Image (cartoon, rainbow, N blue to C red; front, side, top):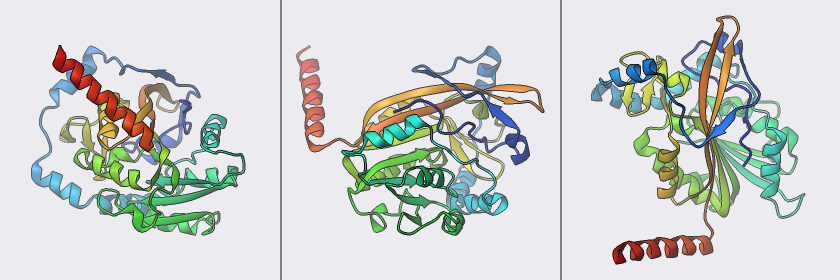
Length: 315
């Protein structure tokens, strides 16, 4: 998988739309296997945040999660996120999934929002069919109202990945590629595995998941004020939407427990420049590629696991 950016600047939802629209991001990010090093001031700030949001409020946030995202799209309509124009290397990644050049590729955009990723992709690749789902019914309506939406090339539907079965709208084991772009971070950590298992049911054996989301110690994580912490690396924004910040170890374990194998899993470090405010802030994303094993691969993994256990017992 290419570790170039899926889009030039991912928006931090804790800032205003106007401020973010003036941000510029350097085109190249540094990829690394280790998390960003924090200054002493940043370490002190994180260690001082020990109090968590009350259990009652956390339950309320979970119950109203869909409503909060629906209100987000009601306020911002289709104007908040920038279109995600995939680079040539990302197209090569999709092309690599084909056995021959003209083969139709089936993609699932899990958490499609208002279509900022799927519509540039449909324009560029005429041999692709996209299933697109989102938690927010309002976001799905925006997708369907887009002039580029064609039922013969795209099927959009509302879905809660943590409880609605994707197989009600997508045939089992029919998808070649799943994109999870700034989506899993909005799911409660306790329900992330369920969401991935749901995705795994519609993905073909040998199919891939392309993942990009907020990484551990991203600037947005360090900027949350007191009273915003829900748990380890998990925070709530002022509008009630939530965000988790991933370590590569947590993500790898999560996907492995859901039945996937890791191919690429790295941090992308970059800087976002806000000229108006004179700020240059460190951004951290996690960009990864996971594969759903074929039956032969599953057998190899199981054999390796058993051999490892036997070796430890002998020691």
